[in-house]
Image 1 (cartoon, one colour):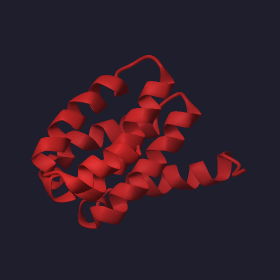
Image 2: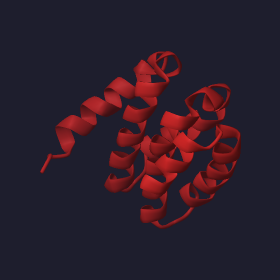
Image 3: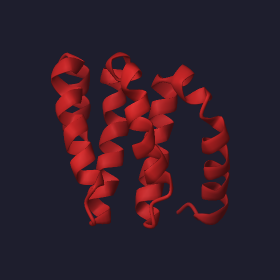
Image 4: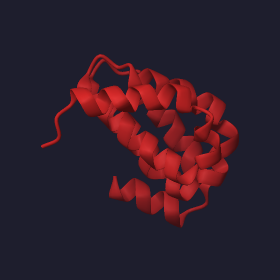
Length: 116
C-alpha cells in the first residue's frame, strides 16, 4: 500500500490510475476475498494523489464500492469502509450525494463489527 501511495502522490495520475483501475477491477473480480480486500484498500490509498483524475470516473468506480459494501466477506466490507473514508476525505462533493447508501452501511458496520 505504501508503494501505491508513493506512486499515486509522486507520478502524474494519468500514469497511475488507469493501470491501477484495471488491476482493481481484476482483483475485485477474484473469488479470493484477500484479493478483493486488497483492491478496495488500493483504491482508497490511490485517491490522495489521483483524486482530480478520478472525479470524472466516479460513476464507474461507485458500483465497485457498492459491491464491496455488500461483499459476503467481512474483511472486504471493512476494507471497503476504509476505502470509502479515504474517498470521502478527498472527494467530498462526489460522496456527499451518496449518503443515503453510506450512512446505513456505516451504521451497521459500527454496530456489528467489534473493534479490537
